[in-house]
Image 1: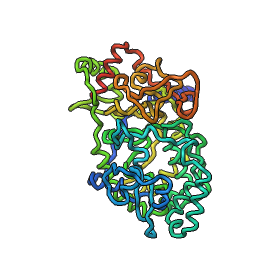
Image 2 (image 1 turned 90 degrees about the vertical axis):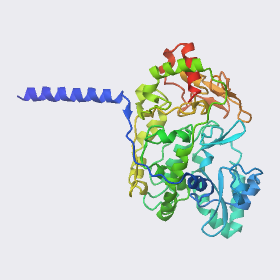
Image 3 (image 1 turned 180 degrees about the horizontal axis):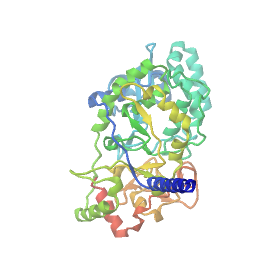
Image 4 (image 1 turned 120 degrees about the horizontal axis):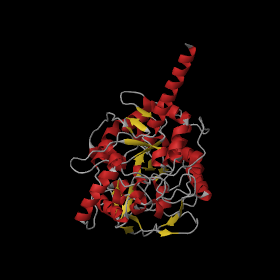
Length: 458
């Protein structure tokens, strides 16, 4: 009898393990969560004038460092018309006019001379060599603030956070974003319930600074989870207010910011992908659509009036792309616990972090304009996404007067034989790999060209 029981247990264990392996190699659908929505116009206004970050640099000090803007790109008027589009002028608690960063630091990009709100910033410099990274500038700032006590009080929280985490934020390459690192540092230094700031990290901070490419905002309306690995479940508004962690010192401010998030989400949902501006070979695109739907639509969905996006998480062994970002999110249990026990996870519309060992297959609306590609921006063109054999290991592009390749869909770039300075994308660095997603290698050059033509129509 014992032998039979032992054999039965072994069989059940083996079957369970086999089912687990099968499960780990199969795409997993993400269920939808109920979202709060509001007024899109109010959401836009709050985004570009609101005080979700409520401590920053005095306005006159901003003018001294960056000068007054001559063009009001957002038609904001008043003091906001005099600062760059990715900053807001707000009142500090003591009535001082201060300048604070807004969402467009990462979620806007200039394309052919036009500011494209919702397009990820792919030219930002978050390396050690950036112009404002200067110890002498920091000393001048502190001397100025301490000579002006009221302005110092208005800037104190922002300056304290900046001094604590600034040197831990740098990425290696211009154009990629340290958003995940910033979030990790802010979480590590804030109490999960009160949001009180601690100069000493309260939980372990990951050592790695993993780069990411900022996804387009217009994709969010189709997605059931936020972030590249479907990490963000539940209420999207709670994640949208993440930047407030820069200066969020109590739950009263958190509640005030949260009240505006349904409006902000409605604004994001209102953004549509820009149409491809060039001529499209309709016959070739029609052929590409058939090839795409036969080879790519299972993960990335179908498009048009009857389109359907499946919201599938693709396991890392299947997609094969650089896994450092998802591993970093997946392995640090302390940070997951922090969030899932924090103020963000409470109330009538909670949010929850749910890690996954892989990445979500994104919708492809407006993909023609969203270069570079992959979650780390490692591939310069769609042509190279569809053919892994031609992906450059080291490549660079002109960040000052970039030109777009409307046939290959991506930035015109130069392939190099070896690593270079911060303007050279180096795929041999940890987290910067351009491997994986080789599904379309099986297509012929003609088929890939047809698929590219079809992607121009999305």
